[in-house]
Image (tube, rainbow, N blue to C red; front, side):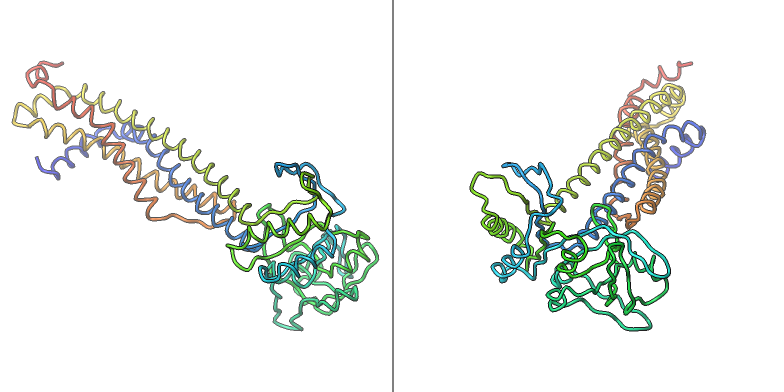
Length: 413
């Protein structure tokens, strides 16, 4: 019997009981759908992580206020800040060959208002370097002035100037160019808007990076918060290879400046964006692995279902097998027919699973607001897996059918 005849015979046998065929394929369908959805979600999550970390700056080295244990575990935080402006200047000067810039940063929650309305937001203070290391860009409007970043001179003079994030612009100046206008805060300050920032979206922690008012660090410390220390130090290494070197050098410089002796806990800690990215990718990989394991279990259950149904089919069609053998069918012909039936069952489940998995993946990407990705390799993997399951779990029933005694089969009632 040739391949075409084997396929036609298998299809005729399966179409004779459509309900059983559908239910048998269901386990394969669920497993393949889970594989497709898992692979797509993994790609989407990775692209979302890459986008979030890319918006922050992949080579960032960040110093945080807070005490740490000797093992590096954070055990407390200093809400007032641990860094002085001299710390930042020391990093800028000593590490100049290794970094593109360094800025001290503090923030203060406030309520901003204009004649059109008000909104709760946060004032973020920094030096002009913050725009370079965070890769902020000025947003351009179709009409009116383009805007600019504030300067070192404006930092030294505690100037009342600001730049607005896109979220604040939409709340206070909808459909307007706010450059040149004034924003008031609940502390009684008035800031002249000198520019607006291109949107960055959510950070890797889920916070809105565009919900901010950027002002000179000196203005924030003297006129808004009244704090003498800063919460963060942010530097950007010139290359990815230098991030760990910058982290170590920054840590050493600040420990000396803060008179922290060997063996004492730091009142700050320094991390790199690469470390956060690695943690996020590990979490994503672990979750994907868990889903894949569940999908594999589903495929095994589906395969067992295929084998069970094929064994029942062999029993039901014992007389048919005997007649086929009596008229000249060989052992390999019977083996091929039942193996083809099992493989077709698995492939039907696989094709439906691929379609269902794509729908699930699209739904997840829509709700999670990440890229929808279905790679050809994942589709091929799913199809190959479904065929392999059919062959693996269908071989035993097919082999059993091929070894039946024709005489006993003809006597079977």
